[in-house]
Length: 123
Image: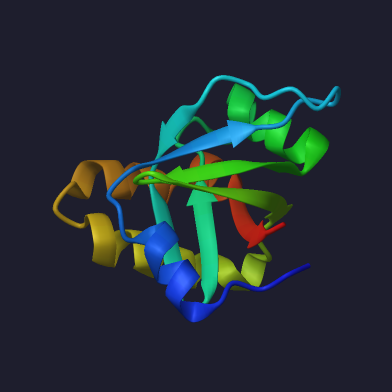
């Protein structure tokens, strides 16, 4: 897996919301889905608020590829499941970035969304 350059990781995670676009098995792209995104140093993570049943999440696992659109910049990416050891840091990153939405962040720390945490790598 490729790693983000620090400045690219910051640019991808700076917006409040980004679009995730999942690549289908035939190479075509699904419709964009708006998500929250966080960083931990030069690592980038997303979490599905609807857990593992969300269409975009299942597609990301199935093909492992897609795009992130942050502001007006598109990044081709690869998705992998986050390691259990990363989950506490991802929780903290969501709390630091989106803490003003406490009830939503509380939800994202529940078992379902927590089990649907992906790390995003540049393709």
